[in-house]
Length: 182
Image 1 (tube, rainbow, N blue to C red):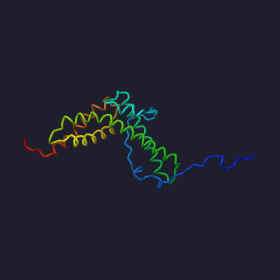
Image 2: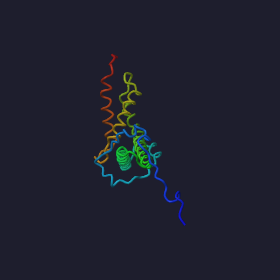
Image 3: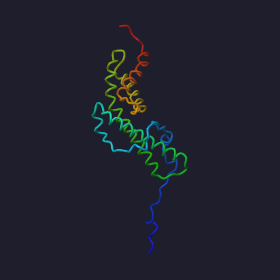
Image 4: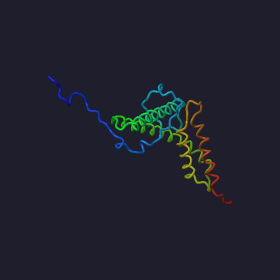
């Protein structure tokens, strides 16, 4: 007795480059090349537990950064495979979307946690000529940039790096503002 053809093996669903949102293919996944990605395991992350905190323990902070860079590394590898082939398994596209979303979620969680620190720095510079809302906008830009470039293996905490990044972001902003006599 032979098995019906539809029960033998599931068809491999393929996709083409036309099925992909173009910005996803053009996105540059910046990851740390100094990390040994073979040693990093993908862990489950409880995002809700982190957003309530003001600072993270050093080991948790370092693990989150490694998880983010692992997801970016894997997404970049899949994107390179997809862009070099005319058709590819649909599962690769789904995995690329999952990894990109995971990296973004980790980055956004870290930015949310450390935006509280950026707010305290911005409050030090706020006055009538430099409104707090404009300084917060500048500091958020610095936070996102610092989170993307931070390397936990250099021995520093992100909070240390972030203080300097936010202050550096404020310098051109504060110097470009017109001064009014008081």
